Image 1 (spheres, rainbow, N blue to C red):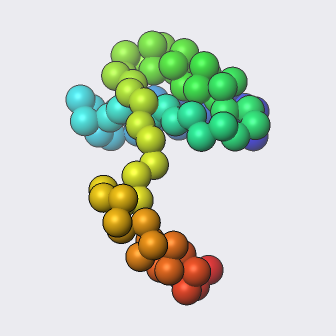
Image 2 (image 1 turned 180 degrees about the horizontal axis):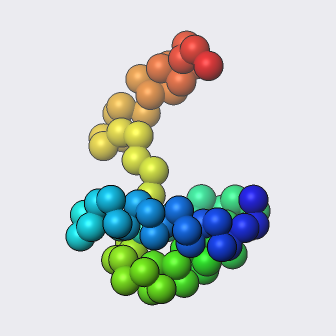
Image 3 (image 1 turned 30 degrees about the vertical axis):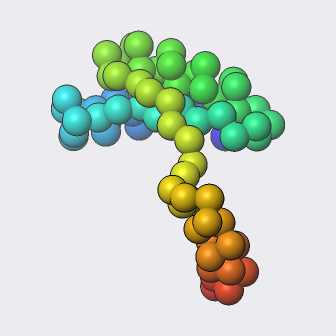
Amino acid sequence: QNNFSAALAAAEKWARLFGEDFYIELQDNGLEGQAQVNASLVEIAKKIGAPYFATANVHYMERQDAEAFEVMRSIQLT
């Protein structure tokens, strides 16, 4: 929602609650605006002293599981 101060306040709240177990996650899935969000998340992490790390979506570990994953997605209820 492009509200840095609200995001910072929320991160501060969660950091107080979880202490050393609070981390900021960054992803790059090619979504519009994601680079700016990630930059803001890094800034928030630095302000509150939380570690940050990059992750990627992983849905299956072996290439042969791709077909089963696609079947599951096709029948998944939303």
